[in-house]
Image: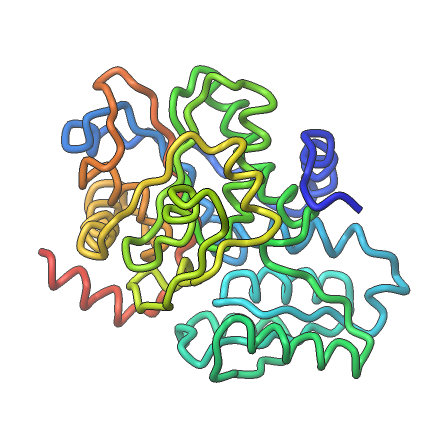
Length: 323
């Protein structure tokens, strides 16, 4: 099978997912526009039933598998939102889900995953070690593995966000997308560039985990030491093998955002847009606040808000810190 999604894959995913997910609205962020210097539109994937965009890719992949392939169950590792998406897909299909999560996963993401009926294993190790354990468990039990960002059908599911943006805002100029493993931006960038190449696609990455930023400079996938960032959902040290060439082909620019600007973006979204966004979701607003993305006052900029699953007590501490 191909290791990348085509526009046809994304359009098929859109039809497959229509009965099961929300076509999230584009919300005009007028109160924020003066500070950010553009016409702002927010794509709140926080409103999905699992609180994040990951349900799109997890469900698209799961629905594409045969009954025989999923009979014993589904398995993956995740920083939390893919886990919830896959747990939801498994519950909908009536099969078992097992998720191997880092011990650092926010408690709300662990609780939400378990509440959807999945078995959760907390694992103390890096991404490579977690995936080794996932493959061992999958081989022992006959589980179907659903990778959070390497799988083309997962990327195609995430790409349906790009279709919705173009449908709702046909004259959009720029789309800003968070970058973790790279599956989200690969899917959205494919959908947008294959449909309307003039749209500028920008990836926003935490300054503490600048794997794609440095890979672009070095002209090859570059692994970096894993550092802690407030944006836990984007905390990955190695660029995805399959997303990397897609990003190099379709993403116009990659910008880095410091944690302080990510936090400021979270607070601005809560105060001015009345939206709760986890740090990873607020990075696009942080990029605009920091001036990392150059925009014009008349430029129509869409920022994808990827999820809102974060512990409320931690959110409260951040809001108090800034306000």
